[in-house]
Image 1 (tube, rainbow, N blue to C red):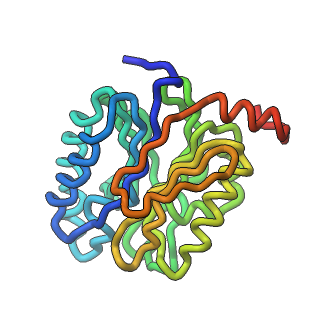
Image 2 (cartoon, rainbow, N blue to C red):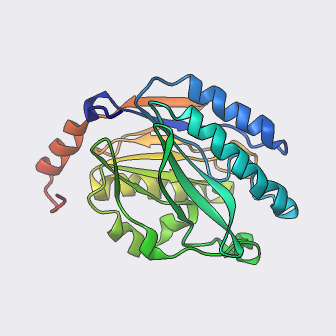
Length: 245
């Protein structure tokens, strides 16, 4: 089933990842149920398990189970999150786009956060897998947390209508996060949807930014929703023409 871009909504989620994987999945599914059809829903990075390095087998097994649950929950909706998965003899942090009961897009995180020792436990994806894809005619790009700091990926995202940023972003650098996601919207004259965890070590700065650079933070809302408006993108790109087609 396809829908018009005029019918789409954007949703950023904000919730805490607990040590209980099943509880996290139920929290996510309950928030998904609160949204209307034709909504692009973004959850934070590794929202179901966290970076549970001491239980990697358990985390990757749970990702397989959760994948089946999310395929079912994505009927007439789009759900975006990252999961820890075993692939090619290693463990990767994989972003998955569930859309109308199928996996529409997926790729491994291309830039691991060495300050958090991610490279000791995870394998890195590659820049070539970073690409713009479409959901019902809307051009989408995804930055996974630390990838937000790499300008070569900003270039690859040029032309996207919506940029999604699932993150587990450290609270000491929360101003960096807010500045970068706002700048990303202004540079691309597009919508940016960011989701961070509510955990104490994280920025909790889930937000939706318009093509005009207007930032709306989730605040105390676990589910922030805005209507997607293609005209806002076209008007901004016409008003300040920087060559984005």
